[in-house]
Image 1 (cartoon, rainbow, N blue to C red):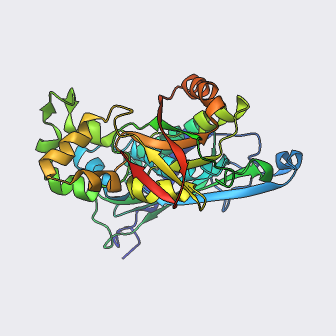
Image 2: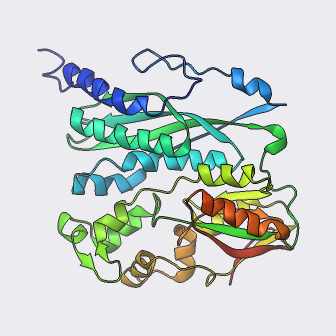
Length: 341
C-alpha cells in the first residue's frame, strides 16, 4: 500500500505546481521576495513607509455553489476570477489597494490540467486587481470530496493610508450614489438559481433569445473586479465618502453597511438597466421583487457615495477604468437603512 493507492497522487501535485508557475509570474509585484514553491510567500512592506499611517485591510471568501456550474460545464478558467473578486472587492470598499492574494483549493482528485485552469483564473483575477498571487495550497482529499469536484476559497490583503479610509462618517444628505454595473449574477444566490433552473448540462446549453446566448454562459460569467475603478476615482482627486460591495444579501443587507447612523440611502430601481437574467430568475422562480433585491445585485456590483459636485468627475474616472457607472440615488437624513423606489 502506498499514498497513491490511498487516493493521493504526489506526482500530480508536483505537476500542478509546475503548471501554476507560468500563471503566477504574470501577477508579480516588485514587493514579492520569493517565488512559488517555498513554505510561505514573502512581501516587502518598505513601500508602505511612504504612508503617514498605513492600515492593512483583508478579506476572505469562496465561490460557493457557483462551482457546481463549473463541474457540469467542465469549465474551470473563470471561477478563480470569482474567488479573487469576492475578496478584493471587500478590500477596495475600505479604500484599500490590494497587495497580495492566497488561494486554497481542496479536491477529490488532483488533475493537473484542471488545477492549472483554476489557477489561471486566479492569476487573471489578481492581474485585474493589481495584486500578487503570493501563494496557496492545493489539498487532495479523497473520500471527502467526489473525485471530479473541488472547493475554492481565498484570502487577500490590501493597504490604505488611514487618512484615505472609506468609513461613511462624512456622509451628508444630498450626497449622490453611483452604481457600477455588474457582469450578471456574480457569485451569490446560486443555490436558488440551481433550484429554479434545475441545472443540468442540457439546461445550461439552452439558448435564450432574451439572453442572446446560452444560459450557462450567462451564469458562469465571472464577477467584476472593481479595484481599478476605485483607484481611478481616487487618482482623479475625488473623495469616496462611502462604498458598498453588493454581494450576498443584495441591497437590503449591504447598502446599510456603508452608512453612518442618521442617514439613509434612496435608490431608484429604474435608474439603470436590470440584466435580463434577473428578470428570468424572478419570473421563472416566482420570486418576489423585494426578495430579488435582498438576494442579488440586480445589475449593480458596487455603490459609491460622493459629493454632488464631484459626480461628473467620478463618472468619467470610472468609465476611464473600463466600467459602466450610473447615478442611482442619493443620501437623505433619517433612520439608517435603504429605500428602493
